[in-house]
Image (cartoon, rainbow, N blue to C red; front, side, top):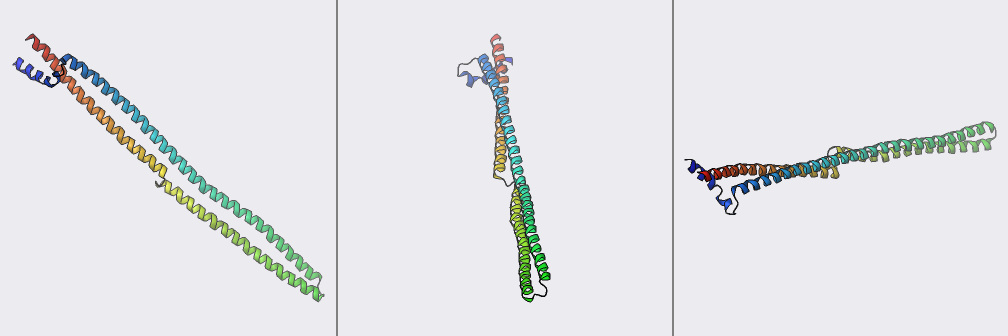
Length: 222
């Protein structure tokens, strides 16, 4: 019975014995291969771990950069709009104040020329003209401010849309980063799974070869 079982174990070595390797040599070769398998597994875990870590760092950096740039663009638009409107209001106020001062002078002239028909008529004509200038300047100021708001409003709308697009995943650089991360995660998982499977198979083979080596030694004594 013992010999029959030993013969069964030894039969598993036939194909490998064709290469003129002894059971002990096969066990030694298995151990070398297992050591290499473990080294490969460790290397892949380290390399892919670092690669994925770099991918995540790059993704985080690009998201932060894109959001900061887009957000700053909106802030800059708002600040420029406010500055432009304040400047136009200041300049317009000075113009209107000058117009009103001119009109006030016209009214004083009318009062001073009261009784002088020709001078009074000329003063009234000038007053009417200067009042028209005030009306025109007032309308121009309102139009200028309206144009400022329209110009910057469109710019703010565009930059806000860009910011929202980034938040919703519309940035090409960020999407490329995500794609790279996904690819590297899959590649790493596949490599590690293959390494683990190879190691497991080689460990099983080692057990078989160790059993065969033991059987060969025992058979030599029987």
